[in-house]
Amino acid sequence: MARTSETFRVVEWRSAVAAVGTRRLDDSAVAVAVAVRMRMRAATRAIHVYHVYPHRGTMRARGRRARVGTRAVAAAAPTLFCIDRDGVINVDVGAPGVIDVRDFVLLPRAAMAVKMLNDAGVRCCVVTNQTCVGKALATESYVRDVIHGEMRDALAREGRGARVDGVIYATRTREQAPACTRRKPAPGMVLEALETFDETDAARVVFVGDTVTDMQAAARAGGLRRALVCTGYGEVMGKALRKANVSLPTTLTCAADVPLGTMMIPDECFPVDVFEDLFHAVTCILNETP
Image (cartoon, rainbow, N blue to C red):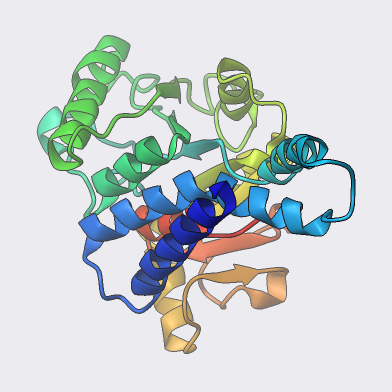
């Protein structure tokens, strides 16, 4: 009976995902469908492992194998998203970033993307350079308490309680600290995020950003998955790919895949997955089957 029940729910999930693929759901319904998909992932794997070993041992022994198999496959599922702030979560106002809270505006669907991660049980941490502090254009307390306070409030308002699990930022400029190991493209902040969330498997971590420095920081932190979004500084990439009739998502595997006149992406960053925006990245990645 247990297998019959699980099979029914997996079929129900597949119908929901099919609806997402054919764009028959709005953004809110997509979030619900993806959450259902994540909850049903364990059931799907358990059924798969059961059929792989139908001839081995008793029913009890097969149950143990299914649980072990689930953990092994689940290792590829994302457990942490590191997300750049300006140009990914909120509208990029240009260097050196938001220095007046009145200029902080969420990008469309960003709050829903964070809510989707929350519902799926995937942690999310904002990782951002805030050199406006080093340039004395804003105090650290203003960035930390006021601007990031508004970010949290706006996510909760627009994302039905959406929340980020942490915010890590670097404040020093290149002139102040040329060899800074925290400021992107250095990997220091990303490594801090991994330590904070006790994440030791880079294969389970995704970095979502809109710049080359984001991709470099992710690569240098141990090979995190790189997700480039076509918002903020990434808009130029999206326009070039659409002009070349390349549909998203797509994967850039080498410099030859990068459209001319967009970004100078160094070899250390490849492969790079490209998505429309944060919501598109979260939806696609959570819907992948490891």
